[in-house]
View 1 (tube, protein in one colour):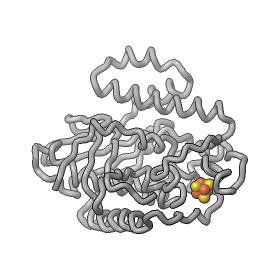
View 2 (cartoon, rainbow, N blue to C red):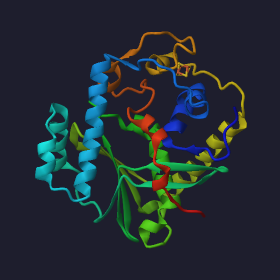
View 3 (cartoon, rainbow, N blue to C red):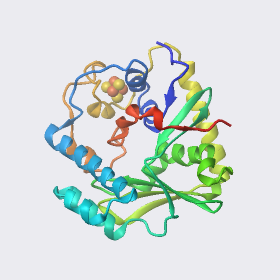
Length: 282
Ligand code: SF4
Protein backbone atom coordinates (compact mmCIF):
# COMPACT_ATOMS: atom_id res chain seq x y z
CA UNK A 1 0.00 0.00 0.00
CA UNK A 2 1.62 3.36 -1.03
CA UNK A 3 1.71 6.37 1.27
CA UNK A 4 -1.66 8.17 1.14
CA UNK A 5 -1.39 11.68 -0.32
CA UNK A 6 -2.90 13.16 2.85
CA UNK A 7 -0.40 11.35 5.11
CA UNK A 8 0.77 13.41 8.09
CA UNK A 9 4.26 12.84 9.42
CA UNK A 10 5.15 13.35 13.07
CA UNK A 11 8.39 13.09 14.98
CA UNK A 12 7.17 9.73 16.26
CA UNK A 13 6.50 8.27 12.81
CA UNK A 14 9.77 9.65 11.39
CA UNK A 15 11.65 8.23 14.37
CA UNK A 16 10.02 4.86 13.72
CA UNK A 17 11.18 5.01 10.09
CA UNK A 18 14.74 5.85 11.09
CA UNK A 19 14.73 3.07 13.69
CA UNK A 20 13.03 0.51 11.47
CA UNK A 21 11.41 1.25 8.09
CA UNK A 22 9.27 -1.88 8.37
CA UNK A 23 7.83 -0.72 11.68
CA UNK A 24 6.90 2.60 10.10
CA UNK A 25 5.13 0.78 7.28
CA UNK A 26 3.28 -1.61 9.56
CA UNK A 27 2.25 1.01 12.11
CA UNK A 28 1.48 4.11 10.05
CA UNK A 29 0.76 2.93 6.50
CA UNK A 30 -0.79 -0.48 7.07
CA UNK A 31 -2.06 0.45 10.55
CA UNK A 32 -1.50 -3.16 11.47
CA UNK A 33 -2.76 -3.97 14.96
CA UNK A 34 -0.61 -6.84 16.18
CA UNK A 35 -1.30 -7.91 19.73
CA UNK A 36 1.97 -8.33 21.60
CA UNK A 37 3.50 -7.25 24.86
CA UNK A 38 6.08 -4.52 24.28
CA UNK A 39 7.64 -4.65 27.74
CA UNK A 40 7.69 -7.00 30.69
CA UNK A 41 6.45 -6.86 33.37
CA UNK A 42 3.23 -5.61 31.81
CA UNK A 43 1.68 -4.18 34.96
CA UNK A 44 4.77 -2.12 35.81
CA UNK A 45 4.93 -0.82 32.25
CA UNK A 46 1.24 0.13 32.29
CA UNK A 47 1.56 1.81 35.67
CA UNK A 48 4.53 3.81 34.49
CA UNK A 49 2.78 4.95 31.31
CA UNK A 50 -0.26 6.02 33.31
CA UNK A 51 1.88 8.01 35.74
CA UNK A 52 3.65 9.75 32.88
CA UNK A 53 0.35 10.66 31.24
CA UNK A 54 -1.04 11.89 34.57
CA UNK A 55 2.02 14.10 35.08
CA UNK A 56 1.56 15.74 31.68
CA UNK A 57 -2.11 16.29 32.50
CA UNK A 58 -1.28 17.94 35.83
CA UNK A 59 1.22 20.31 34.23
CA UNK A 60 -1.28 21.14 31.49
CA UNK A 61 -4.02 21.89 34.02
CA UNK A 62 -1.64 24.06 36.02
CA UNK A 63 -0.76 26.03 32.88
CA UNK A 64 -4.47 26.57 32.31
CA UNK A 65 -4.85 28.09 35.79
CA UNK A 66 -5.97 25.25 38.04
CA UNK A 67 -4.55 26.03 41.53
CA UNK A 68 -1.46 24.04 42.54
CA UNK A 69 -3.02 23.01 45.88
CA UNK A 70 -5.94 21.39 44.10
CA UNK A 71 -3.62 19.51 41.74
CA UNK A 72 -1.33 18.42 44.58
CA UNK A 73 -4.29 16.61 46.13
CA UNK A 74 -4.76 14.72 42.87
CA UNK A 75 -1.08 13.67 42.73
CA UNK A 76 -1.50 10.79 45.14
CA UNK A 77 0.62 8.05 43.52
CA UNK A 78 4.30 7.72 44.46
CA UNK A 79 6.10 8.64 41.21
CA UNK A 80 3.55 11.27 40.31
CA UNK A 81 3.79 12.93 43.71
CA UNK A 82 7.58 13.18 43.41
CA UNK A 83 7.51 14.49 39.85
CA UNK A 84 4.84 17.07 40.71
CA UNK A 85 6.78 18.28 43.74
CA UNK A 86 9.92 18.61 41.57
CA UNK A 87 7.93 20.53 39.01
CA UNK A 88 6.56 22.97 41.57
CA UNK A 89 9.99 23.53 43.13
CA UNK A 90 12.31 23.38 40.11
CA UNK A 91 10.49 23.79 36.81
CA UNK A 92 12.25 25.86 34.14
CA UNK A 93 12.48 29.45 35.33
CA UNK A 94 12.09 32.68 33.39
CA UNK A 95 9.92 31.28 30.65
CA UNK A 96 8.17 33.87 28.47
CA UNK A 97 4.76 34.85 29.78
CA UNK A 98 2.62 33.79 26.81
CA UNK A 99 2.19 30.04 27.32
CA UNK A 100 0.71 27.57 24.83
CA UNK A 101 0.47 24.15 26.50
CA UNK A 102 -0.35 21.07 24.40
CA UNK A 103 -0.38 23.10 21.20
CA UNK A 104 -0.32 21.33 17.82
CA UNK A 105 1.42 22.89 14.82
CA UNK A 106 1.53 21.71 11.24
CA UNK A 107 3.27 22.75 8.02
CA UNK A 108 3.86 21.31 4.54
CA UNK A 109 6.94 19.13 4.08
CA UNK A 110 8.06 17.41 0.89
CA UNK A 111 4.55 17.24 -0.58
CA UNK A 112 3.00 15.98 2.66
CA UNK A 113 2.41 17.58 6.06
CA UNK A 114 4.47 17.51 9.21
CA UNK A 115 2.76 17.97 12.55
CA UNK A 116 3.80 18.03 16.17
CA UNK A 117 2.10 18.26 19.52
CA UNK A 118 4.17 20.25 21.99
CA UNK A 119 4.04 19.96 25.77
CA UNK A 120 4.59 23.72 26.03
CA UNK A 121 5.56 26.61 23.78
CA UNK A 122 6.29 29.86 25.64
CA UNK A 123 6.57 33.04 23.59
CA UNK A 124 7.87 36.52 24.13
CA UNK A 125 6.69 38.06 20.83
CA UNK A 126 9.53 39.23 18.58
CA UNK A 127 12.05 38.23 21.27
CA UNK A 128 12.22 34.51 21.96
CA UNK A 129 10.39 31.22 21.87
CA UNK A 130 11.02 28.41 24.35
CA UNK A 131 9.82 24.88 23.63
CA UNK A 132 9.61 22.72 26.74
CA UNK A 133 9.25 18.95 26.73
CA UNK A 134 8.56 17.13 30.02
CA UNK A 135 10.38 13.81 30.36
CA UNK A 136 9.60 11.20 32.98
CA UNK A 137 12.38 8.72 32.16
CA UNK A 138 14.08 7.25 35.22
CA UNK A 139 17.58 8.02 34.08
CA UNK A 140 18.78 11.32 32.73
CA UNK A 141 18.82 10.89 28.97
CA UNK A 142 22.27 11.83 27.61
CA UNK A 143 22.57 14.92 25.43
CA UNK A 144 24.20 12.99 22.59
CA UNK A 145 21.14 10.72 22.46
CA UNK A 146 18.67 13.59 22.53
CA UNK A 147 20.65 15.40 19.87
CA UNK A 148 20.00 12.59 17.41
CA UNK A 149 16.30 12.27 18.12
CA UNK A 150 13.84 13.41 15.50
CA UNK A 151 12.02 15.34 18.21
CA UNK A 152 15.02 17.67 18.62
CA UNK A 153 14.95 18.36 14.89
CA UNK A 154 11.19 18.46 14.25
CA UNK A 155 10.04 20.64 17.15
CA UNK A 156 12.27 23.71 16.58
CA UNK A 157 12.00 23.37 12.80
CA UNK A 158 8.23 23.30 12.89
CA UNK A 159 7.80 26.16 15.33
CA UNK A 160 9.79 28.34 12.90
CA UNK A 161 7.73 27.13 9.94
CA UNK A 162 4.30 27.30 11.56
CA UNK A 163 4.55 29.51 14.65
CA UNK A 164 4.11 33.00 13.18
CA UNK A 165 0.60 33.27 14.62
CA UNK A 166 2.17 32.93 18.09
CA UNK A 167 4.44 35.88 17.25
CA UNK A 168 1.86 38.49 16.29
CA UNK A 169 1.78 37.22 12.70
CA UNK A 170 5.48 37.80 12.08
CA UNK A 171 7.75 34.96 10.99
CA UNK A 172 9.87 33.48 13.76
CA UNK A 173 13.62 33.46 13.26
CA UNK A 174 15.51 30.25 14.12
CA UNK A 175 17.88 32.07 16.48
CA UNK A 176 14.88 33.09 18.60
CA UNK A 177 14.14 29.44 19.43
CA UNK A 178 15.40 27.32 22.33
CA UNK A 179 14.26 23.82 23.20
CA UNK A 180 14.42 22.52 26.77
CA UNK A 181 14.06 18.91 27.89
CA UNK A 182 13.10 18.97 31.55
CA UNK A 183 13.42 15.69 33.47
CA UNK A 184 10.91 15.16 36.23
CA UNK A 185 13.37 13.01 38.20
CA UNK A 186 16.35 15.31 37.50
CA UNK A 187 14.78 18.75 37.82
CA UNK A 188 18.09 20.58 38.30
CA UNK A 189 19.61 19.09 35.16
CA UNK A 190 17.55 20.09 32.12
CA UNK A 191 19.01 19.95 28.61
CA UNK A 192 18.96 23.06 26.41
CA UNK A 193 19.26 23.14 22.63
CA UNK A 194 19.72 26.56 21.11
CA UNK A 195 18.51 26.77 17.52
CA UNK A 196 19.97 28.84 14.69
CA UNK A 197 19.65 29.43 10.95
CA UNK A 198 22.30 26.87 9.99
CA UNK A 199 20.61 24.17 12.04
CA UNK A 200 17.23 25.10 10.58
CA UNK A 201 18.59 24.79 7.05
CA UNK A 202 20.18 21.43 7.83
CA UNK A 203 16.98 20.15 9.46
CA UNK A 204 14.85 21.34 6.53
CA UNK A 205 17.05 19.45 4.06
CA UNK A 206 17.23 16.33 6.23
CA UNK A 207 13.49 16.16 6.97
CA UNK A 208 12.53 16.82 3.35
CA UNK A 209 14.92 14.13 2.12
CA UNK A 210 13.58 11.69 4.70
CA UNK A 211 9.97 12.24 3.64
CA UNK A 212 10.87 11.92 -0.03
CA UNK A 213 12.79 8.73 0.66
CA UNK A 214 9.77 7.23 2.42
CA UNK A 215 7.39 8.33 -0.32
CA UNK A 216 9.79 6.93 -2.95
CA UNK A 217 9.50 3.45 -1.48
CA UNK A 218 5.87 3.35 -2.65
CA UNK A 219 4.28 0.02 -1.90
CA UNK A 220 7.56 -1.88 -1.67
CA UNK A 221 8.14 -4.11 1.33
CA UNK A 222 10.04 -1.73 3.64
CA UNK A 223 13.31 -3.19 5.01
CA UNK A 224 13.56 -4.60 8.52
CA UNK A 225 16.04 -2.98 10.89
CA UNK A 226 19.44 -4.61 11.04
CA UNK A 227 19.60 -3.78 14.75
CA UNK A 228 17.66 -6.71 16.15
CA UNK A 229 17.83 -5.36 19.70
CA UNK A 230 15.10 -2.92 18.66
CA UNK A 231 12.81 -5.85 17.94
CA UNK A 232 12.75 -6.84 21.61
CA UNK A 233 10.55 -3.83 22.39
CA UNK A 234 8.50 -3.92 19.22
CA UNK A 235 4.96 -5.36 19.06
CA UNK A 236 5.57 -6.72 15.55
CA UNK A 237 8.42 -9.05 16.49
CA UNK A 238 6.44 -12.26 15.99
CA UNK A 239 5.09 -10.98 12.68
CA UNK A 240 8.66 -10.25 11.56
CA UNK A 241 9.90 -13.53 13.01
CA UNK A 242 12.24 -11.59 15.27
CA UNK A 243 11.41 -13.43 18.48
CA UNK A 244 8.49 -13.75 20.85
CA UNK A 245 9.65 -12.60 24.30
CA UNK A 246 9.20 -8.93 25.23
CA UNK A 247 12.08 -6.74 26.41
CA UNK A 248 12.38 -5.89 30.07
CA UNK A 249 10.81 -2.70 31.40
CA UNK A 250 13.89 -1.88 33.50
CA UNK A 251 16.17 -2.06 30.48
CA UNK A 252 14.14 0.59 28.69
CA UNK A 253 12.73 3.00 31.25
CA UNK A 254 15.52 2.54 33.73
CA UNK A 255 18.45 2.87 31.41
CA UNK A 256 17.91 5.83 29.14
CA UNK A 257 19.79 3.86 26.48
CA UNK A 258 20.11 4.40 22.77
CA UNK A 259 18.87 0.87 22.35
CA UNK A 260 15.35 1.77 23.27
CA UNK A 261 13.26 1.91 20.13
CA UNK A 262 11.31 5.06 20.82
CA UNK A 263 10.41 7.32 23.66
CA UNK A 264 7.53 5.93 25.65
CA UNK A 265 4.48 7.91 24.73
CA UNK A 266 5.51 8.70 21.17
CA UNK A 267 3.04 6.13 19.97
CA UNK A 268 0.39 8.57 21.15
CA UNK A 269 1.30 10.76 18.18
CA UNK A 270 -0.82 8.56 16.01
CA UNK A 271 -3.95 9.64 17.84
CA UNK A 272 -3.41 13.40 17.61
CA UNK A 273 -6.63 15.31 17.40
CA UNK A 274 -6.31 16.78 13.93
CA UNK A 275 -9.10 19.23 14.69
CA UNK A 276 -6.73 21.11 16.99
CA UNK A 277 -4.13 21.75 14.35
CA UNK A 278 -3.25 25.31 13.49
CA UNK A 279 -2.43 24.87 9.81
CA UNK A 280 -0.24 27.64 8.49
CA UNK A 281 0.46 27.57 4.77
CA UNK A 282 3.57 29.22 3.42
S1 SF4 B 1 10.05 -6.53 14.96
FE1 SF4 B 1 11.99 -5.55 14.42
S2 SF4 B 1 12.04 -5.65 12.18
FE2 SF4 B 1 9.92 -5.99 12.78
S3 SF4 B 1 8.94 -4.00 12.74
FE3 SF4 B 1 9.67 -4.34 14.83
S4 SF4 B 1 11.68 -3.38 14.93
FE4 SF4 B 1 11.17 -3.67 12.76
